[in-house]
Image (tube, rainbow, N blue to C red; front, side):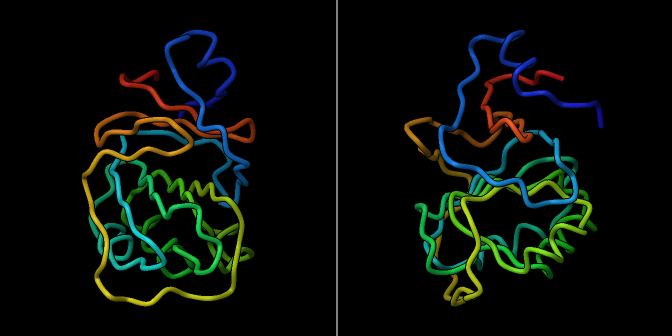
Length: 159
């Protein structure tokens, strides 16, 4: 993939919006971006598990976990499956686990932190809906770009 710099992209496209949260870059891929697939779930990663099993086509899964830090929405096995299926990465408004393993997985992963506790699998959540994270509306089909500077959202592809 082309090198991504969110500062440069925001300079070139001033209409982009930053997700103003304390993102931590966990994946082996430190710069990533692509078209958005949205998931909203709370302490249940059933839909994340289902989604990473599909062909990613270089897209990015944006997961709104409501910022919960009680249960990890991504672990090493799902990250490995996402990488194997061609997902560019995941942006998680919540936490992950298996930090060291995810750091060796060829995938972009940004999250708010980590927690060793896995989620329950109750099949609860919604996919393909509009999300609002940090006051920013994110629609399935938008584009996100992430690096060590943060995460930006665009209505159009920037690369």
